Length: 110
Length: 113
Image (cartoon, rainbow over all chains, first blue to last red; front, side):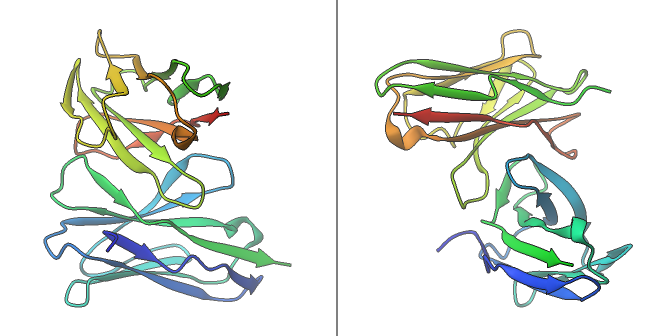
């Protein structure tokens, strides 16, 4: 079983719509969680950290459910520029070692 | 300021050849990481440097892979006797310390024919 699993999508949504997706992780001792964004043929970039209490950054909301071992990302009022692959990332021990999911592809259409 | 840079951006080599991939981290970042990303997958950890030393090389797939960072700045990932399965994007990242946000370079796309 992979450490971090994501629905690959693609999620095709119209501009202005809300889209949400989850990822699950297998190591219950995992300490920190992130969402990265990766555009086609580009490097991953940190989108946001995910905190236990849930957190919001503009149109993006991240939630963590430790009991069920999943993390979610919700994008409100989708823009064309939100089209990308979103990578779920887990750090087991608050150190350097990041475990990446395979990514969820989101395509926002006009 | 300048981000992480990697050279070459693309490398095509024949099976069995030796290749070197270079990473220039952000100035002042002591931690440096190499990852490998295959098509349709997320990056996979290869090796972590803190300063000049490899603090964790547990992700290197076999002894054909080796990386150095002799002066604690630029790092080189070396692959001997390349195989077609080595084809992937090799990403380098750096951070201020081992627990800070990692900034990725644009990657080197390696194709082994």
